Amino acid sequence: MVTKLNTPLKEEDVRKLAIGDVVEITGTIVTARDAAHKFMVETGKAPVDLNGGVIYHCGPIVKDMAVVSAGPTTSSRIEAYQDKVVEQFGVRAIIGKGGMGEKTLSALKRFGCVYLSAVGGAGALLAKRVEKIEAVYMLEEFGAPEAFWVFKVKDFPAIVTMDSHGRSLHKIVEEKTLAQQL
Amino acid sequence: MVAMGIVADIVELYRRAACDLPPDVAESLLRAEREEEGTAKACMGMILENIKIAREERRPICQDTGTPIFWVERPEGMSERAITDAIIGATKKATEEVPLRPNSVNPVTGKNSKNNIGEGVPLITFTEVGKDMPLKISLLLKGGGSENVGLTYKLPSDFGERDIEGVKRCVINAVRRAQGNGCPPGIVGVAFGSPKALVANAALKQFLRRLDDRNPDPVLGNLESDLEKELNLIGIGPMGFGGKSTVLGVKVAAVSRHPASFFVEVAYNCWALRRATVTFTESGVVYGY
Image (tube, rainbow over all chains, first blue to last red; front, side):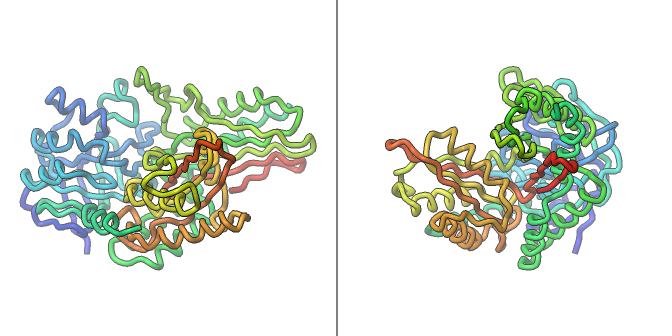
């Protein structure tokens, strides 16, 4: 079963989600990687309104303002900033890959947000769910992979792997697989 | 000089590597999908659909088109410099045309060169072959996420002695620590010996081998098959969601070592193992995997 989500997201909709749920997002999502998160935390500003918004850890390939390939990047690099961005900007969902740590997990619970895993490497498939680029910010300053790209998406698929109730699929798998003896 | 006329063929090599997953890797992923269930199966289904879209529409499989790494078999008498120039020219062109993501960043200034050219990049390793042999160029597009989970170990340590068992424990540790961050089910390239630069290169080169290829040395061949079995019992699964498929293959090489040193390099490649070859034969240009 697939849960359809439309942006901006409401807290009550996000709170209903649990790890393992498959979702499809329609609306607006904004890419932000390491440089963009550092910028938001240091300046206290975001180039677009992120209230109820969705952040996507992604450095897309773009040609002539069309998205060619746009899968997720490794989220753990953003761990130092993510909780502050969720708190300060009212973000309701983060899309990435590989999962995030305790600081983010705790912020998801406190502020009502979810972490969604997109399938790593599925750049071609995910690009086809981006209908158009609405805007791009900090392209010159950060370079294409690190810029803020504002995507209009339809049925963008992802899996809830960290929910707003303190559960993380990444943590469950990690505990199971690291605990084993050689 | 053949090298002058090969730019377009190297651009095509880039396109094939970026958009068209080698058949042995695609088949292995299909087998993995059949074994999984639940979230892991849903994930594998998207991977398979993605491969199909990328191939049919000639879109890069992954937006991270990686760092380009070349191995060139150069016939005696052909200019290394001319081939290097052709590769650099083709890299700039491919960045625009395929397109590739600009992935070369100056580590001092933080500036992106925007054309995938930078100090030391693309990495090109030449081997001279006989005059009558064809020029053969192999390309690996090495993604950054999986590169980040690779590790170098030094033996002896807590992981073991300077023996096959020690090597094995290092590899298992690296794959465990990688969890879902290297985009499993991955391919693991291992090399041991010294010095570090030699070991690192040998580990990277393992990604050129087909998944069904076994090291002909019985000790190393057994190590490969043992590791494949053991790593797939850990349970990390596709994208770290939990499941049966953690690795598609393990390839091991050994290089000579200094009596004092024993390094184990564990290189990791995501499921999207993007390799392609082009050979310039007398009867024409032949592409392969």
